[in-house]
Length: 333
Ligand code: NDP
Image (cartoon, helix red, strand yellow):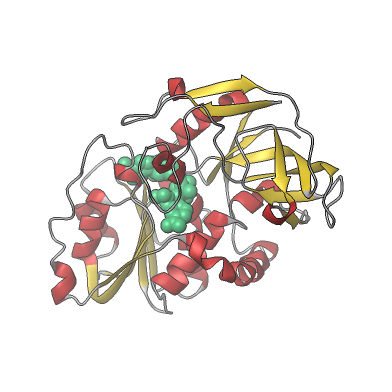
């Protein structure tokens, strides 16, 4: 079995030298544990923050220790009641081929016909819940709202746009970093309009695709995007502050929006959230999004990289936008 350890802390953009692939034995489960052969592991933007030596809402990764994160796999040996060899589980010990997991840290999952197992790491998992809670609860979306989402072709953003459309948004617009992604948004995902933030200033492009303004901004990006959205928001507009990926690799402090004062006159609500506080909404999300999936009303994309040895590269590429939809690493079939 092999695992990926944090070899050094990245400064600015991570490189493959920050990671180390290590051969370890296959561990044996203790009482109350299961041994899981991981099939898929997730690489997520929040992991970049955990590579810094700063206390945040999740503790930092430790140098010389394996990384962790969402994974799905098959129980190959169980010493825990309620779980048996052959069961499929979702757990938090990715970045390794075999994982020892305490039974109370593993959630048994069922394979849904027509839906890949990896969906539990994306549309039916943490990113799906982030989109659902962020739009409906944090931004308090209501029918008729005009919605703008950044990072729109990614795991979270692609769902935000589709949920908004299905819940009766008056207009759904998004931004992403390539022409292919823009075509995906306005094609398959049914966005009303979308723009490539790399080709012209966000403020100008947002004004073009949402000339009447927006009621909700779902922020995955921060920086220039947030500033432009503050301009475009209507009175009583709401912002779900989900992430700020444009600054995760900044080597030093970054300026805040120069126009934040607009929040006063426009009576805006800017509300941050962490999905981990909202797992009570998971069953609602799976019921509603699951039904849309079955009916073909929602689609999702995955970008899958094969092999644990390629997981650092997959993580770095995800930060740079190589993925459409959820970025995943397949560890076994
Ligand atoms: P994505 O699948 O969206 O992947 C990240 C994407 O970010 C890339 O594909 C890239 O797409 C885009 N990106 C990278 N750099 C920039 C930049 N400088 N400006 C604009 N876009 C950029 O990731 P997720 O869907 O998993 O996460 C999306 C956001 O949600 C992140 O900010 C993440 O931290 C946040 N998040 C927050 C959670 C919470 O609890 N608050 C939970 C989960 C996620 P492109 O080609 O378009 O540039």
